[in-house]
Length: 124
Length: 136
Image 1 (tube, helix red, strand yellow):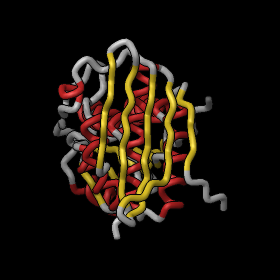
Image 2 (cartoon, rainbow over the protein chains, first blue to last red):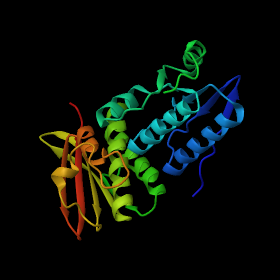
Image 3 (cartoon, rainbow over the protein chains, first blue to last red):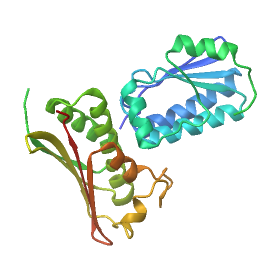
Image 4 (spheres, chains in turn cyan, blue):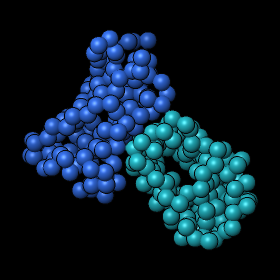
């Protein structure tokens, strides 16, 4: 089974990752690894996870994202979850999911604004 | 479009979790569920399929269109011959898990669906049946 390709884009001092619409567990785990490597490599101060195309957010996905948020935080970065669909937000809340200390934004544009104004490196 | 009213899907690998989601998404959409209910049903199916994969390694998911008092609905049945659940009531508590999961699988799926029944026998297996009704 092929792990879906994920591109981690460095944008000034941030990382931008577009999460695929229906990722399997391996893809989500690979995403976490790639993000942490890129954080270290580029000395980034923040991460934007664009989840605007994500249709299903279940407990495994949520746990891995929450972990990633925490790990990025330990490395001195802030994470913004951008673009969660209304249907996904309703479902995630009913399921009882929490996304750790992630910041949230309506879209990537607002996520970038948020990280520009947020103090960096203040932990999680 | 083929308007099948029931179907079966075998679960045997991790990639089947995503595949099962697709089957359920198509079935729920074809029945006329709105996007939020489709997302609820698909997410519940994802949790229950993952339970089968993690605890029993393999099993089967069946889906069928149902009706009661002129209401239409979707029923999903997840059946495995795995280790079974010693204490179903305990497994229904949020946060309880015997694996490294969040313990949200069963209680979470129950909250997302309208009805749920769990039958389990230690050493024999587990059957989880969930239903969601179309809003009038």
